[in-house]
Length: 117
Length: 116
Image (cartoon, rainbow over all chains, first blue to last red):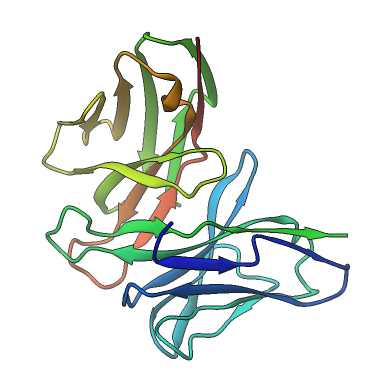
């Protein structure tokens, strides 16, 4: 997990509140991703950003928002519109250029466990 | 729609035994396939990558195979150890190699438990 910091590790929020999850990387990579991981569901892509000031929706973007104002930071906001927000959230970067053995390899952060009360 | 199916969903084996995990995919155009290992409470870590032209690749006691015709991959673990207990995730990349735009499709994983 070294090189990617996600905070906090555990987060609780009341229903109806927005909450922002932090993801910081010091590996100087352009591409960053947010995934949601539920038991038995595997990893599902929420949003991704290939470059600063640009981001794209993934497969399950509804109820989430992101920003990419700095290369090293890609925060995810879970809004009150997300109907089932309790989950484990993982941030990742894509390492390795074309032709390298690490091409498109996803390098994951330690994750944040969000629980909605 | 791109899909990746893994089987079995879970598996329990005795320490020292071998096992094989399966990954079937319907992804187009295929670019590469990765197997990740995810220890409990940790993020997934790449074990190996398979490209279209590769049939077999080993990484220690892990051997991955790829049959691009049948769109199947397997991960064989030899002489299992307790530390092999983890979830194993198959991830297929679609999109043309070198292209800036691509998609990663994740399988739901196989949960392997190695018991003494």
